Image (cartoon, rainbow, N blue to C red; front, side, top):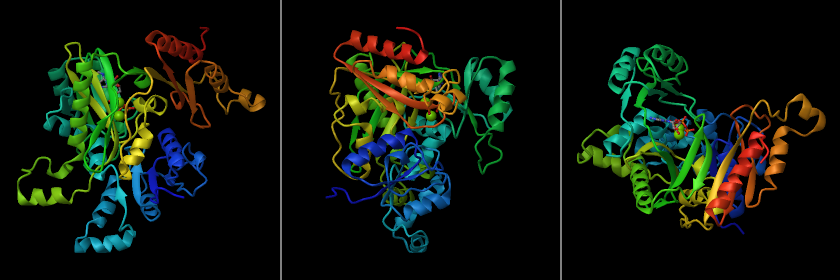
Length: 447
Ligand code: ATP
Ligand code: MG
Ligand code: MG
């Protein structure tokens, strides 16, 4: 007996797709994964047929649209042009009928909406939309040329950040510029690696003022198809080398601050999931704008909102992800409904599950690949079938309250997310103790 008959297509088949697959398997929802890796982490958990092509490939997206009812993404760096065409083909204007036939996608929905994904995947545009909607963000400036970057340096003073507008993750694409002598190198490095843009006068770089935050916070927000916004608890995230290292849930901030952060995050998601990019700057009361607004397909799904808490209590939004997020892994063991299940519920139009914590304290620690720990492909592990990663995994299993997730990635390249551990406890001192135990196992130090 199948409760949900709709098939869901997922662009990207990494660890987020894998945990989405775990939730989908439990609900008996069929997922079709698009990922160039034949044996990607998500595909390993399903015997269904998948698409072994890049999630940026328009043909892969069209092939997917012909197989499923709903398309979603576990990564924001996807081809939003084709996703927009699919959504537009669904609108019943006469000229869209042809496209409809061309793609065979008359019943396919895309969640979150391609508008949301497109705005979010360009971090400069995302900042601009948030700023225009009165969401506090770090001061930022477009830097289409090196001269603009030099002017911005005078305005922001050092240190400040140059950031790639597109394609960034785990801090790859961010450079903290500490002096004038570093500026030219940083600008050249980012502009050389820019993700293609139709506008050749745009370097694809923008600048952000350096924020001396006291803590980094994050929260998962669920947006339902009927415009409910439901928040998970505020968590504290600790980054190491720009990569999420440890997440503490709930975050150690006072109740009023937590409410303020949740409401800010909901407003930020609202700003990014309502108006389409091309009418942001128009008067929304004009008939043309009203008509385009009425045609905009709904956005739905979970969004990860990263924030900075300043010493004066002010909260700024850093960035938003239109998908399940690393800072929400803990929800699998610690909340009444996980972020993965709620993502599926939101895009399938099912009731949103409770986001309450069901334990007192939880924490999550990421396990990254390193060179010195050896990997599954090293000569040593090929010979004895046992790698240093395996010994880390084994030791983690002995920590009380810990749940180990491994992602099934073959190569443990340095910095690659290989797995994570969630640990739960009734007491704040015990959770801290358990997290330190795990960190010591990962760092190879005795506890
Ligand atoms: P993700 O993997 O989360 O998508 P990303 O590559 O998009 O990361 P950001 O979130 O922009 O990168 O930045 C990574 C980290 O760098 C942040 O979590 C924060 O620690 C630091 N950072 C980013 N922007 C600023 C800023 N304006 N001031 C100070 N630190 C910053
Ligand atoms: Mg990012
Ligand atoms: Mg980030």
